[in-house]
Amino acid sequence: MALGDVLLYDDAVAFSGSEKFKLNSDGVGASINAGEFVLKGGVGDTAGYLVTKWGVSVTNKPSVGTSWLAGLAMSTSTDTATAGGTVEVLKPIEGLTYLVVPDTAATWDTQAEYDALVGARVKLSTSATGVQTLLATDGSSNGFVVEPLDVIKYPGKVRVSIRRGAVYNN
Image (cartoon, rainbow, N blue to C red; front, top):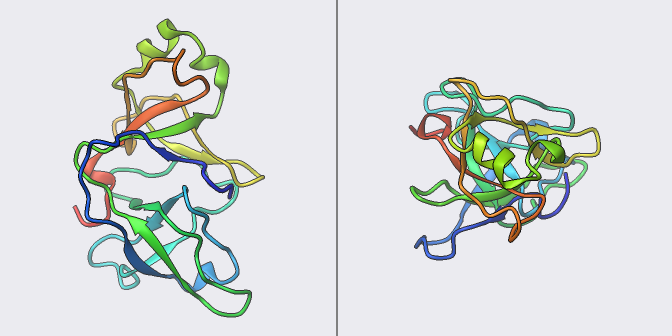
């Protein structure tokens, strides 16, 4: 994935910092970069205490009740080609929103187009090159919600919040 795919939008939301998580064994040699969303098993999952890299060419995540987010990576993971590692993750906080690149920029490039999608429940995709981008299709189980944003001030970005049901510990 690319360093800094996702940016924090809200500076005013108070948080106590990140938390260190171990990478799942399938994360060996698959470094997570700061600024990428990180997946996690849900509560009760036997590997639920481990985080997983959002793999290349993975689409349609997170889903409420079936695939979950641990949060946003705040560091690059420490894994190597032969050993798992750790990564610092900012867990989702009520009121915190994020800026993400859209999958198809033309869908979001005017204020009217953007405003028509505010409130849509959407998912992320990861390209073959590893860039996390936002899809524009609304769905009842999709894990992100599009929030208002000035497209002149933030060209090429979409502001999203995370739905509670898409967070691993809800």
